[in-house]
Length: 145
Image (cartoon, rainbow, N blue to C red; front, side, top):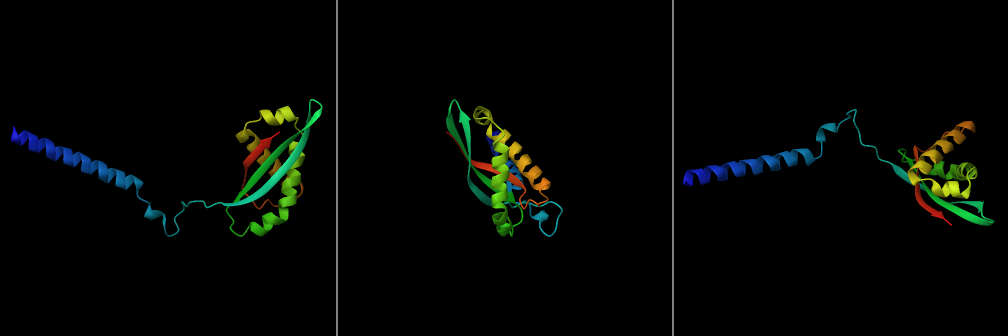
């Protein structure tokens, strides 16, 4: 009986040790990617465009749609470029949002609005022959009144 207990204890210790080793192997940082490997982590830089305001009529009164946007870029030196195009981003966003009625804007889900707005900004920049110094557009705040 004592041998059976010792054998069970040893097997239990081995199973726990194997679990710990597996967990460590799966969770440790992968150092093989260092030194110019083709796989890399993307580090985004965020640039705010605050208070893009659009007023839309609804039932005889003015309603307001306020967005704060966040422009994402991989270029850490893009701050100055993005500051220069801030008015163009605002104009493009307002022009795009102005095509919607208040109820349409209110009904849009944030991910849907975000992807549509991003596509509209890139299209507008392309029509104006301006290189967009950002990679993605996020909606960081939305207020519908």
